[in-house]
Picture 1: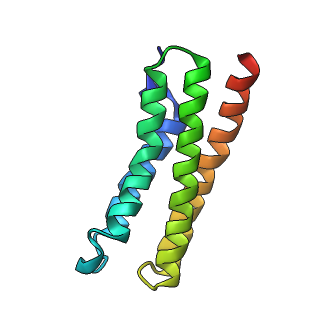
Picture 2: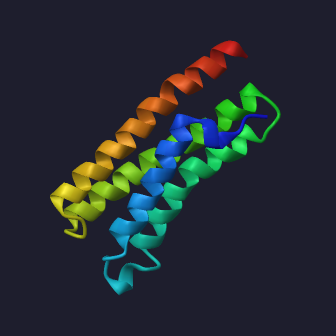
Length: 119
């Protein structure tokens, strides 16, 4: 069992979630159960699945949960684009968050590959 809090990818994804929460506080009230909720859930899913995978039995299960995290990161990446195109996120905020998501995905990909190779 690994301590998820020691993983750089978990730390970075946790910071991403905090940024998503901050960015979505200004969304219109009618989006509270729509895009706001969906973006927050997708964001939270990234570090939550990393944490869950670390608590599982071995590398194969960790790799599976990291793949779920990757899927959630891709979902968040799209939702950021959508909210930018709907003018809910300004260009600066969008670029900052999109870059952050890309960095998390770039950290997850080799981690997943290494775990798969070790299995």
